[in-house]
Image 1 (tube, helix red, strand yellow):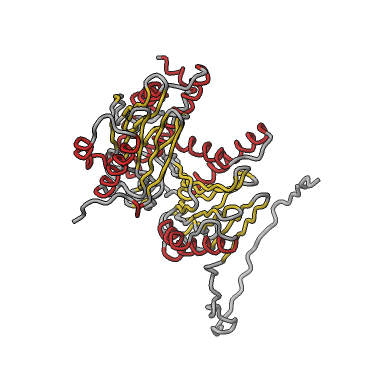
Image 2 (cartoon, chains in turn green, cyan):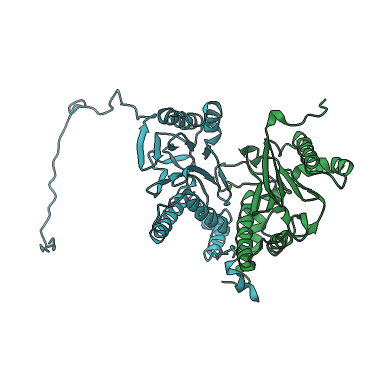
Length: 247
Length: 277
């Protein structure tokens, strides 16, 4: 056995991975005959729109609810806002399998760390755990994650960990394939010092616009507001979405 | 290299020792003049539904090897634990072995905790194993059961992602089955209504998808009881032949007959008794 097959490459030589990994070659129709894998394949930045906004006292996070395998919507009511700890959430975009596995691993590590500390963990800690995993396994993973939450030291924080494993804190962050369509909207409409309700409206509007234009995003809008006192989750169904001009 | 420290970080890698041999075989197959055996796949329609008292799982019974039906009546609803069953689509060997492995581990876990196993536990074990193998284990599963927290239904994809939903379909016939579900699913259905819905969804797969066929198996799981209905509906019974190509003796007239006995000598006779005690 070649000594180069180290345990941290999952035991699979990079050449084999590059040939069969679905992301690079585009989406693949599922369940076809032959050796095609029933892959949960996504386009390069993940078929999703996710968003997070800081406000004084907490954060607002939002996501669409569509998971696709090729052109088929495997789950039209996905919950992409995953709790990592009581006051820390992550928004997942990219490969569903990769992000679910990473989120499970980080929840475990963070829970362990929190018990050791006997204190609620910092959002920055959670973000760094995501970054370490996403950076170390950057060649194997396809995951764009936004970590957001509240802690006592710095209040509401949003950290973005895009594909490749960068970590940066931002007051507002968007991700996923649908994010490209709303950068202009975000840049023009965001102002610092918004209240929680304004942030919720802003996020819902942005996600609705992205879902309107991006074929890989859709379904319902899931929102969550995380503050010191707790968590408020809400769902905006398809017929209740904010409407804009349509030709 | 301090990579060994992170064995408890939740990421467990794996080594593929046969990978070198297999890639060599695949590369040289043209020279050898034969073709690799196609994996037996369960083309398949599988689905599950959560109803008032529990879950109903359904599956067709056709297993294909390329374009040929290898098994007309295979069983795709696998036992995981007394209260949890799992339907499998994809490569037949992979679904069989994976479900058996998790069933075994779950039984040990259940004996260790002294409790009835939970569906979420089975889901975790399956997704972590499939993710470890990065999609190379072609097993797409519908996992359903009833535990202390009520009825649960999960769909599990070969790469290790899972969805927890009130109704799911998987396999090549999943689109046909999902169409039936999206039309007629209601929350908190009665048992007969749920069984009819699942039966119709699998039937849609059987009759509209080439990879699915034969009969419909159902598994109804409620608190404390499991009804494994195999077959629930023989939708494709083999027809009865109306004619016969055998001809009676005497149909062809005999003109001459010559009998030649073969000269055989008995050379040696030995008797060996078998111990049948």
